[in-house]
Image 1: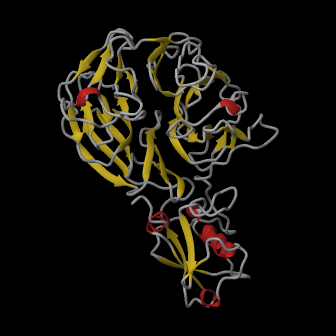
Image 2: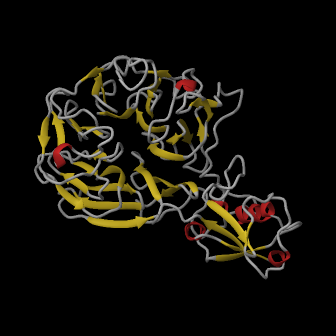
Image 3: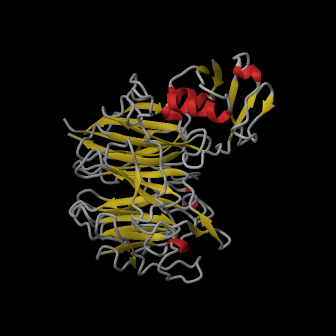
Length: 395
Length: 98
């Protein structure tokens, strides 16, 4: 019997929503880690019971949590519940919440500063993990995108994390600057057909790609135009909000930028705008249908200061032609007096037939559609503000 | 035995009650207390002090005997009442946000 597990990160804890393949009746579990910000949680593609969560707090910093039973129980990697927290000689067993930027002179060219709001240089300061991306092949390997922007990786199931310093060290780092939400590496897209290729996106630096498993990186922002920076077509400095891929075509990516929706057909070498008839091309979330690689979803948001849907109508827009021609999806969504936002990591699709589409709002609703977006219904209505939504398709 | 009081979220993280007791070898300072705390509860490493710099996290304060010790040197001896266990060493989360 197939089913789905929806992993929801919120401003005040994590929630796990489960249903069978019909996706009509839902069980809600949570809050897990009550009171903490859960920026993101995601399951391993090779072991669906292996989940990772980024638990963070302005007071207490960063915690990484792991579950080996599909979210029933959680622990910090390296110290299971009930186990001694130290080794026999008294040393801590885990450093799972330790993210230290690489300052080694032997592993790249680690940078010490980036551009600050006033144009001066500012030291890198770790703040939180925005996104966790488990490997396609190994449940113990996970990538973490952090603020201030950098990419970390664990290969021991989250017990220890090490920076891939080639990203910050490739040369444009001193030009990176924080956006209004900070300078976060918020998007990690792994190529399912090429384990050496990874895409990342950073606010407000842009998109980057490695073809050698993270050793070296290059900006892939040709075709982006951002009017809020001195040179609108600069190599870096673009506020990319999210990138999405259909696994069957890893060279084709879709991007929601601060303004503009774009696509690339050559792995980021060049981008072209596909905003077309969208009512506004500002937004955060974007995703691609699991079985139709030219079917794309966005949630247009009025503007960069008015973070809510135009006209108070919550509408998902779908293009079945890879962009430019978009249709509003409204059935089951509020069409008046709705002023919520949908954040960049708060949309996901399942791989059932017909494809399910899910998104969460800053008003605490999680909506689901079991028919590719034609009809929507709230799974839950009153959670804390939703920061992230991920879906696992269970067999 | 040194008594240490933790804020709510750190209690749940370490799965302990509001107050815990620590044995300290040598001088009882803020540094030695926090070192002992993190050694016994490694999940708290990084939550009170920055991993790299060991600086106090901005929204936490340290109190004992009615005094704010947050800006004191971490190597200053703690008050005798804390050393004797009469008074707790308190780690307090700031009430911020309105």
